[in-house]
Length: 66
Image 1 (cartoon, helix red, strand yellow):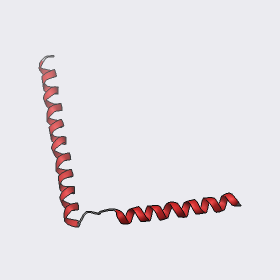
Image 2: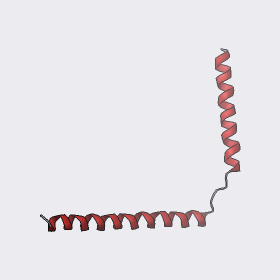
Image 3: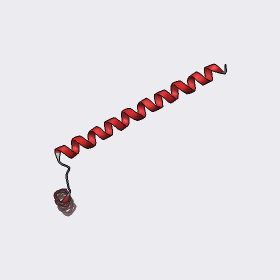
Image 4: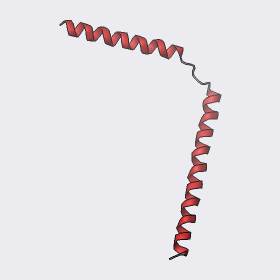
C-alpha cells in the first residue's frame, strides 16, 4: 500500500514538474512557425535534388567506364 501512495505522489510530482516547465517554454508565433517550416521543407527539397543529381551523375560515370 505504501508503495502505491509513493508511486501516486511521484506521478503527481512528475506531472506538476512537466506543467511548470511547459509554462516556462517560449513557443513560436504562427508567423515564426510558418517561416521555420518553409525553411525546413525547402532545405529538405534542396538536399533531395542535390543527392539525386549526385547519384545520377555518379551512375552515369560508372556506366561510362564499363
